[in-house]
Amino acid sequence: MGISIHAPTEPTRFDAHGVNNTLDIALAKGLHTIAATSISELTSDHNPVNFDISLNNYNSPSISTCSFPNWTKFQTVLTESIANEDDIEKSISPQTNKIQEAIHAQAHTKAIHHPVSIIPSQLRETNQTKNRLRKEWQQTKVPSTQDTSQQFTARN
Image (cartoon, rainbow, N blue to C red; front, side):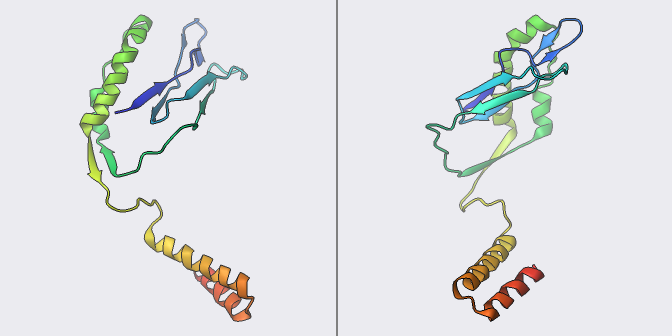
């Protein structure tokens, strides 16, 4: 599946009893050069984490499918509790595999045969018209064109 887990090497949460944990992780697909750093500049018991992502040599895969996870089933697969700190270290790799398997098993995939856009077509067309009218006014400086552009903008 190509999903990787990234976390800082140092703990991100410190409690009064000396039990330190790493709470912040990142799941990434197709991004393999990620440096995670725990920032200890705050006086809190929880350090923020900075994830530096390098996009050098990154080629975005073409989007031809979209995956729709069933989050209820996904959570059911991952309900196993971890008893103690030693078990946490032992369970990281199996848990990573479990997350990947849960995503793969509980998501259905749909082929997409058109360009994917998150902007609804009606809004996209309105923006294109508004931009075209504004450009027309900027190029011609004809007062009626400016009026048309302003009226269209006011209506939409």
